[in-house]
Image (cartoon, rainbow, N blue to C red; front, top):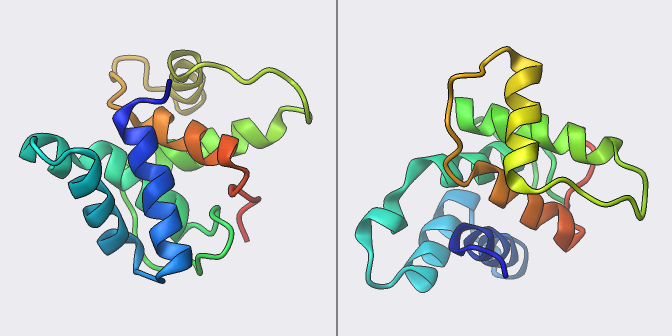
Amino acid sequence: MANGYARCATLAYQLCTRQPLPPAQAWQQAAALVFPHSESARTKCCPKNAFLGLAAAGYLQGIAPFAHRSKNGDYACRAAQILHAYGAGSPLPDAKTLWLTVMHDIGQIDKRPNSQMDVALALYRMGVMVQAV
């Protein structure tokens, strides 16, 4: 079962492509629906910036790249590169393993995950993550 931020990412993507809403506004609306009783969950920046980073870098089909840069976005973009390296039908890593791989790749072993990889994995599994332009 996907965690709340995975659900939030998939809903935000749908809002971006079906409404269409700008990614930041879509995330805000999705978070309000997924976390109606938790302001801290709605405003948590790590998963939000992972989503915005993927969208800004052109990794999300149907969303035009835009200016946005954050460390969490960079982590998610590195995760996208790693996920695309898996062959079709290959089992994907879980969020913890993906996080450790990203951190190893960038030389940061002391950082802790905060749902960034849940966002990346959910969008990849949804089939909307493409190679960046």
